[in-house]
View 1 (spheres, rainbow, N blue to C red):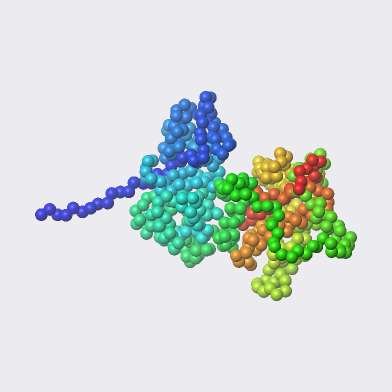
View 2: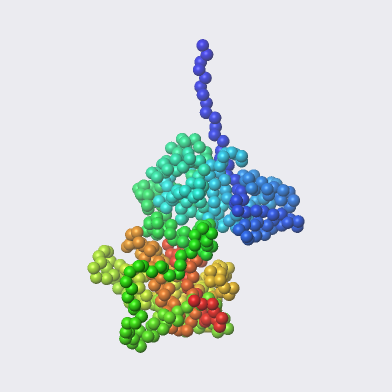
Length: 491
């Protein structure tokens, strides 16, 4: 009798990482060889390319394996590599992980920042991996997506087996155990997720503690919902539509400016007697005159003396003390507190002011930090392109062609609040921003200056300018100030 033949398992083909055009992008080759990308009503010129390279552009719709054009031996590969990199710079690519070009997609990677490029750091068999506490899976339409406010990319999971493997990482898993799953796409995916901080290596130095293993002390202080809200309600770390795009205009009518009156007995307050004092009349007058001024008179810009008075009246530290509580009735370990002109939850005062100065009589154009304790401006060296980008972004948000004379970026030292408060930390910070913004408005009105609050902020740009991680100290509000122009649009 013949001996039974031993079955041998076939080697699993390695997963392939490819770059392909986003579904919303169309490439057109002009007669002069220029390649133009069209998307959402915009267009970007990507440069001139040879006829041989232009002939391969259609392949980007299906996807080109990154290894195909990584080799410098062929000139066409070099050109395609240059084109793909330029597309990535503008956020017009997505990346596909699968076993063959025509096979089923395993994972689609959608960049959330313009300069994302997939990286696969080397993982050792002795590494232990865990899912970040900031990572979450959700349904988006008919897709299952994996994302994190820390990640520079979003992952569409197209294979249910990979979703199951990722679910295992709720508890730390040694890589050698994960490799037993025999899915090379999974192993490749793990490296991509480590690069994007959706997975992390458990640090033996911290005794296997997951929270301290994932990032530095500043990250330890963040709750999941707070960091997600910070990253998704600002600009710079996601690719979602932003601002006044009227997403439901075609399906739902807008709510009326005034709420329909409740049924019931009404009490007319207009005929009641009032006893106004001079201070009440003055305050009421300022409140009535408050406007958002979006254009400024650059012929007579705000002066350094006016800026000094404005900052001293709205943000300067009045006093400082150390106690186990900010007010009677509270308890806890000692903290240092300050008092300033505007209110702050628990006297935490986490807000700091950074000034982007375009025009100010007596002050050079540049980027400054306002030291509220000493009432001084400190010059910060930043790239001219970054300063210009911050100012132009503010002008765009206000719907103006000219930049503000001074743009005040309100940044928060998040740990100042989250060290004490749980669940409500970010909410308290935003309440502080509202209080400070109204204080700015009232003081600008009283001084005869123009001011305007700005809602959208690029947190990644600001992080580069001050050289700090976006979750350590980041922008939570902006306010433009200057001499109001004669035809200033206001309300």
